[in-house]
Image 1 (cartoon, helix red, strand yellow):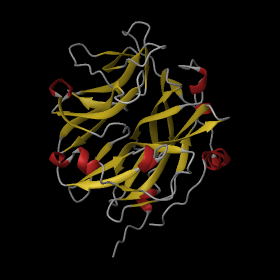
Image 2 (cartoon, one colour; image 1 turned 30 degrees about the vertical axis):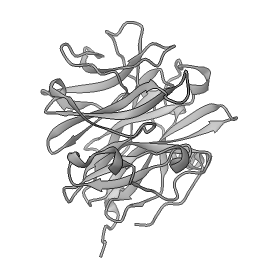
Image 3 (tube, helix red, strand yellow; image 1 turned 90 degrees about the vertical axis):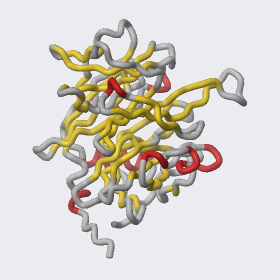
Length: 317
C-alpha cells in the first residue's frame, strides 16, 4: 500500500468539495433527558436483540457529562430503562472476542494546573451493556484510544498522544495479543504514524473496521483552528495496513455544511463535526453518525468510503 502524504485541512476540504455528490444529513431526535444536549454518539449497535446508541449527555453550559444508552421508539431515541450510565464523555463501542467493549473519556482536576481539567480514556467490558465492568485505562491526557480485532487474532490499538510526544495530537498504533496487555505502559509504546498532520493541526481515530483483505478502514477526525480561535473538525477516513503499519492517504467524507443548521455549545465550536461511527450498508452506501457543534447528533448516508480500500492489493510478500 502506498503511504499517504501530509495535507492540510483546507487542501482535504477542497478535494472533498470538488468531488462531492448531493447528499444531506438529518438530525436525530432524542428525548427523556430534560433540557440536556445529546451529542458525540456511537453508531447503533445490537444489544439484547435491539439497536442501541450510546450518547454524551450534558447541559449546554457544562462539560459535566453522562453517557446514556438509548433505544428508538416512534422515531425518537429514548433512554433504555434499567441500563447503566457512566460519568464519561465521547463514548465508543467495539466487540473483541464476542464481548462488548465500551470506552469513554473521564475528566478530573488537573494535578499541576489549578482550575483546569485533565482527562483519560476508560474501558469497560461485558457480554452486554448491563454487565459492563471497568478493566483498563489509558494515560492521563490521552483521548481517542480505539481497539480493533485484527485478521490474525491480535488486537490493534490506536492511540492519540499530545504534548511533547504528539504536539496538538497525532495517531499512534500498537498490537497486543490480549486485552490483558492493554496497559498504560503498552499504550505509551505505540509507534506514531507518519505523514498525517501538519504541525498546527491534529486528529484522531474514532472507529476502525476490519476489511475483507485484512486492511483496516479507519474513521476519524482531522481538525484545525480558523482565524486562530474557532475550531474546525471534519470527518475523515484512511486505509491502514496493520502488519506493515502503513497509513494510506487521508480524505474528508463529511463537513458541517452537510447537515442542517442548529445550535452550538459556544461560538468557537460552530464548525465542528465529531465522527461517532459508521454502519456499512449492503447497497454500496454507509451511514455516518456524528456529533455536531458539541450540541446535537446527526447522521448522513454517503457512498461507502471503505469499498475502495477493500480493492487494494494486499500482497505483503
